[in-house]
Length: 475
Image (tube, rainbow, N blue to C red):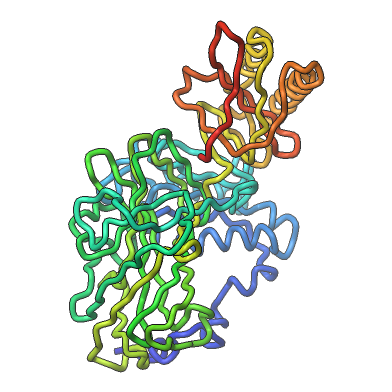
């Protein structure tokens, strides 16, 4: 066994031993153009995202900051550019020639060849579920707020589970029955993913050993782009244990396909640099970083969150003793539990304020226009729809074809004037509400209004009686 293995075992916490090689502490010293390539199922995804963001903000020179590019596809670490990973095929758009991208990058920077490697927005992400690419100016995406999903008691339909819990956007109004389970390190939940790639797999066979929380079937698509985090308030009979949280996309045929996950060792709940063992049976707050995703949960699908305390051998077992890492051979069973009060357990999705329809990306809360002459509304929408296929969303790159800024300026100017005139003429009223996702496309007239990151959605209702816009629900 190499000496370095023993050194690693002697330094389980973050600290000076690791800092010498931690580039995240040296972003302001970096002056190199970098194209960061990663996958949503890559064990190094967090490094790609954080280093792109960090160098883009803090790189030594402006030239360096402007020369950062990020590409994230539906890949793992070992299959970059392939359309099939795990049990899912993400379609022909997922295919990507990484070697050609590298050669063009090196041609530009090492040979001085003028090509298109710096054209377009710096961030290119693959939107799973819709299976297409989207462009942005930065990561994390701007204008996106966290949307909480609460862990609830009740009948969240699942084939097999320890609790069949419900996942809902509605906050609990009071205490609900807590859920718990026994975690035995001698019988850990086996991994379906490797230590290198957390590929999408169907987890139904393992859910009988986990807590699960499942939404109702979605009535319309739900788009999630950005960081994902779970907050648990729980207790354990042991001084230390692990919390594993996984987000799954449940298909109409029942498949529970993994999207993203995370793990937290309880002793590092407050700091990765300092151990703090728990007092058994005392409630603590645990924040589990599930990294990030770009996923459309389609209509008819469900969201499911799994909670357990092991994922072995992808992660080493927590023996629940609180002892030194790697020095013990015997563990103990831990009884772990969490509650469902109004603040107990919640999954934060970067979902509120993002919806996709056709070639348009809408961001933020929506002012609604209601009432008035339907012919006038159709005129406004006709002006806008002529530009929509070439639309560029400010700060988020080209969504259709890439004529971009000039088209966007014309788009904003046209809609700005027409929409404001309608409000001034009393033919529409301006109200603030949360976003409505128009589905299906054929039943809606729509437009977007960008100044101040505010947008208009238009619904076509009751054609004979005029245009009526109802209040939109949460996405």
